[in-house]
Amino acid sequence: MSILLAIESSCDDTSAAVLRDQYLLSNVIASQEVHRRYGGVVPELASRAHQQNIVPVVDEAVRQAGIELKEIDAVAFTRGPGLLGSLLVGVSFAKGLSQALERPIIEVNHLQAHVLSHFIKLDESTQTPQFPFICLLVSGGHTQIMLFRDHFDYEILGQTIDDAAGEAIDKAAKIMDLGYPGGPIIDELAQKGNPDAYHFATPNIPDYDYSFSGIKTSFLYFLRDQLKDDPDFIEHHKEDLCASIQNTIVSFLMKKLEKAVLKHHVRQVAIAGGVSANSLLRQRVTEAGRRHGWTVFVPQRKFCTDNAAMVGIAAYFKYLRGEFADISLPPYAR
Ligand code: KG4
Ligand code: ZN
Image (cartoon, rainbow, N blue to C red; front, side, top):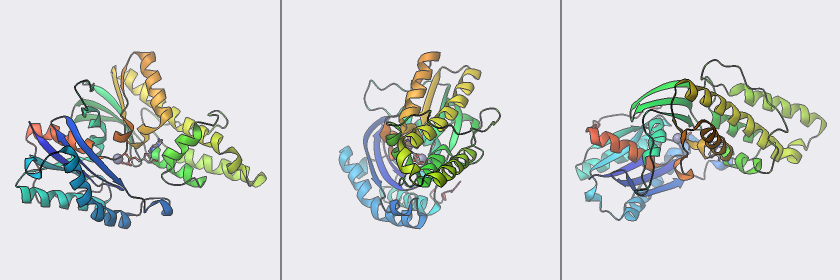
């Protein structure tokens, strides 16, 4: 039996979680509100907020888990990729705590953690993926189709050559002045809109790669044209615009994912990362699973966006292998 404390601080969420083996005991997330008024994450403010949040968040995670600090067998943390100043807060805290408790540290890659979140068990009935499986990882910083043969043995089948899917959604929201982060706002407004109201061209990219910067640009130019005739165009067609841009992005994501899964004859398919919280993507991947007879894994919404539970589960599989990190280890941004 192992008890792990995990810390995530790669971007703008400060999070701590406690796991007993594969089972989640607590997962506390402090989302930083300071960035909203800037319409994006301000790195300098993010590290300061992590510095303020980290002790209370860890305390709360330990309290909710009903454990004592001395019961912890190892301290895990996100090493990268992410914002360096933000990562440093979590890395330094984890190292300090591990020294004080005389326990080892485990470093975790943020992207692997997003995918491995599917192995978190809430109770005995939780179903987890079997290898091999394909995961579409879609977040604010990454868009990748990954083939997993084992927990840490994977191949990137395709990825974006420019913007990430989440980045494109956030930028579309910014163009419409909807607020930050745009993903959840567009998701919500799209529920009331017509997804076929407008069409935005998707680029012809070979194999399983993606490109989102052109979609964003064609959306921008389309709006510019419309605004010339009707200055209130966005206000009047907000729902349709959200539904249409979301439909464009999700359909593109699904097209490549389906192609990759069929080509590799894989029967287990997962989505992960912040954009996997999107209602339309969740619906589409579930439908595709039904159509093709795949077993589909859609994470609970709280495990889609950044959280320490996913760091803890990734660390658990490293703990089983005895893969501990050196105390001098630095974080990495990319
Ligand atoms: O994984 P994540 O929390 O952070 C990164 O590692 O990047 O992903 C954040 C991204 C943002 O772009 C956000 O707009 C997007 O996930 N997102 C969504 C939804 N919820 C979060 N995108 C579409 N629909 C949502 N419901
Ligand atoms: Zn993330």
